[in-house]
Length: 260
Ligand code: 0WD
Image (cartoon, rainbow, N blue to C red; front, top):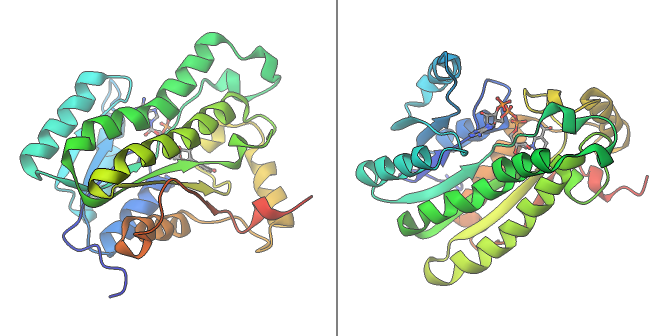
């Protein structure tokens, strides 16, 4: 098999349901032979846990743990268990984001300092925190993958504060790649996905209009699927991408190249 991840240990964050991009990534990593660790966002009633546990059971995750990236103890505990059970980490998938709904509609000038902090803390700084905790565990040639969107560099209607968070995330990818590359050849990259209907994207005002717009204008005349993003993540996680680091890779049907 050209793309072989057998024996690789991958931590996948951000699976909320069967529409999640992280779910598409987890499935493709599993198909390529990777051993999975799954984290889920815990809620008081345990609904997320039950849903994600049932969904991911067929992939036989070796680790299944709660992790809210706003909870430093929980993050630390994930990596302690990971160290005990696996001893090392080959693939880290950061596939989560959050902004208050009020900050994802209407005028950008209404963005509050609190809304700004929340969006950047959860959606950008969490990647740095995960990399700091994973740093001692990264194997030679390990791969870190995060998810971004074109709203980082263009003013996309309603994306607002999340555009700022993604811009910071893309800059973080470059700084993390520069820090983590020299010692162990760890690579850090982002996938900029076209719009896909998910729980998170439904919070962005006018997501269906965005999808239709892409379907009309992208060179491929369609948006992309979770599986296509998953395939690209599997490639980036593999030695086939051993020369690629610090990049933003567009998986958007070519939309971002169009002038209008
Ligand atoms: O069109 C899209 N769907 C695109 C999404 C286009 C381009 C990029 N992306 C990005 C998103 O910004 C995000 O970074 O892909 C990533 C995954 O998003 P998704 O698959 O669209 O959304 P979803 O299935 O909702 O997964 C995101 C999950 C959360 O779900 P909800 O909807 O409950 O917020 O991120 C997790 C949670 O599971 N999450 C957290 N995890 C840990 N700690 C936290 C947190 N504090 N907050 C949210």
